[in-house]
Length: 319
Image 1 (cartoon, rainbow, N blue to C red):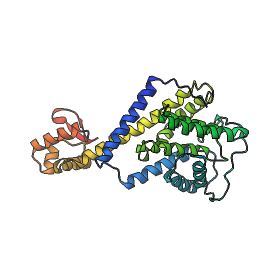
Image 2 (cartoon, rainbow, N blue to C red):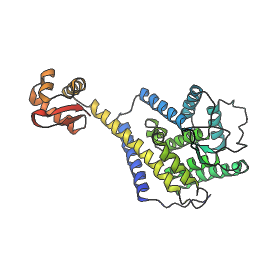
Image 3 (cartoon, rainbow, N blue to C red):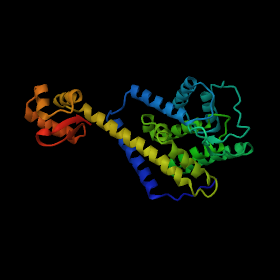
Image 4 (cartoon, rainbow, N blue to C red):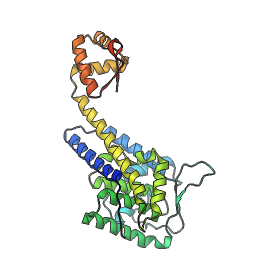
């Protein structure tokens, strides 16, 4: 499996942004700006719900699949045929000693949400007769590229996601499998911010763009790869958005924990009564006006409060 890459400037900028945000997240984590387990659980549920919104080939009751997906997203994973088979067992509640069959018939890759009268087809998957060879080639190529370090890990993961969907090796839930495996590979290579800012949520917010990019990229996948950048742009852009959102949110949470009592009191009053003026804050808090004025400036500069108007009409709301 040969791979020719012609990166665009925006693609390189997106990778740089992801790496920068991942580093910022690591520093925040070291400074104990770590989100609670409750937030992690909430992020997992968003991830599961978004995955369900992107999958079409299943007849499982939503609650059953939601529970199985949660387990699949949380299980330990490396990358081998056995690992992927075990993941499929988890996702389909198949016993450990049961053989995992490969797809034996046609199964087009389709989107789940188009109105009646519109074709859900994204692209046709490969012939069942080619699955075993192509799937083996994909796994060998992926591990080889990770080991040789000739391509950026994000590019390798993006190619894996696309080619897994093109192959669709299993009888069902191939899209779920691609999303789950991509998440595990991202965490494996240090992009663990997606545990709190799920990639699937970002992809599901603009399904049209996501499926259109996959459709365009698949046309040359395994050939000259001339359309692969269409998918990379969406994949990297979604990851960059996830990372930037999380870092911004956690930096704000860390900053809030550093606020003094006066600043916390001012934010509390603005939350309850906002938009509210400086004099009103002083009156309601019992803090003198000059102290309120100084701290309003600090809180506005740090992004905790938003200043509106001017002069005597100036008011403050929570940002």
